Length: 445
Image (cartoon, rainbow, N blue to C red):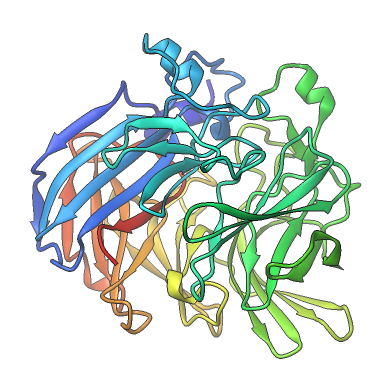
């Protein structure tokens, strides 16, 4: 039995709706909108011995806040064809791309719509405000192929910049979507071996491409493996820079030591240098094939020198953590604070930790905030008090699992001093399985 089907990872039976949720503490009245999070929740039958965490059917969880109240919690399975069939429903409309349609990794708001998204070539799945599936979307006919789980929003323009890939394409795709929700640019980027490109970075000047040695394995795919990507030491690890909004042929490559990065923390320009803060694994999907379990991730800084073509690589912290986030207003700019969730400190090994990691953007120092006995947090989202607020003037939000109560909560911490404890806890009716990424989607602004 895969550990990713047990304990905190185990799926819940089906869709959930609960209204007028109990709040412990006081919800800030400035929080008007939805906290959303996506993650695996298998509905269709899986092989317990072969199950890979990244392949489970998607389920989006959402909490709607308004006027200091938690009006509802909803959990909705994202309707792939197989999920609809398992539930006895007609398939959701919309073209599927390249055999991919399990949108289980992230959920975003874009141009007044809500989308569940995933890497490796699937279409975004449009959801209603209440999180029911509308369709598998090509963004009004503007998206030629699939998309990715990790677009980066340029704070200056509202444009979404992303790197998409699919095993059958001989190249990556640099995709730019305007703030109006329509694709404006698609650029091929030639790479060998079919690498898994989970995420990307932007700066004020550059699109950053991570071409690292986890690549498509045709032999694994021929055996029926749903996640046919594996560690490939023969593939040169490198980072590419191309001008933001530029052509794929303009990319400039910088070699780095073999490693893998699921999630960069942030990137920014520094004169003739580009600074990349990344959560780095020594290797991944080598000995362990069912999840990111080959070793703990650490915070590193890569400094790319545009004049010399050299890269300085330095580890900033010994603390293992994942799911790094910054205030969205400083994406691609120098940041003062960042946040993550600790992994690897529990006896169970490289599991989610119980502590919030607060990272000093200048030094890389990591301060840990305990959430209490038996309490496990996920990815923290920073919500500023208002658009002009200081970088730490606002709230951190995530779903926290309380093992004692065997259910989850939406926890709201003060960003300036998360060790002060929650300003509010929204009690949910069930456990939310450990999952991946999400967003705060305000109703206004």
